[in-house]
Length: 251
Image (cartoon, rainbow, N blue to C red):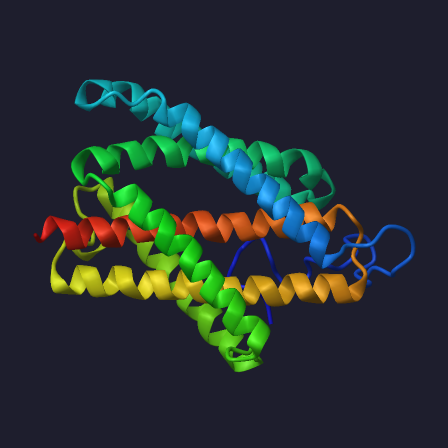
């Protein structure tokens, strides 16, 4: 069963050429190595975010943030796709992805902060608090990545992506799903559900990385595993921002 994270699937730790699991010959992927590289990528996300944030000087700076949001999002998407299809490039593309995504996240966060002061620190705290809770639940065995659990999370993640895609396409015709951005009770419940699903994807990511370590995946897969975790964390953070903004807009 694959992870709900598109960067991690059942073939992630298989040899692309032969479909065979990597052996432990030579340098192998380790858990500590993956953790260290995850930390480094998060630092790069922060550096990129600080670059965008430094361009924020109140409402008059909003026009300058727009290109950073669009450019960072597009660059991050392209680099994510390249990394997903060329895993051996992860030592180079994963850090570049982290920087680009940081630029996007920093600019978008500034826009949210302008409208809802204090929301960014709340979202950051909730994101890393959730990650810590999920890691503790996974390591303690409180939440187990069984096949049924994986199937449920993957199905829910796919459903959310389809809803977002449908809303995006409908936007070109002047229509959209109001509950995605609206602050109605249904809108808040939808965002809360998305946050929960994003958090549960962390469990699948932890499990897939642990499988890679156990299979003796090559060293560069530490970068790929770190990249995949950052993808989920960025998604979780953005959904936290969306949920908090809906709650604050009702005050």
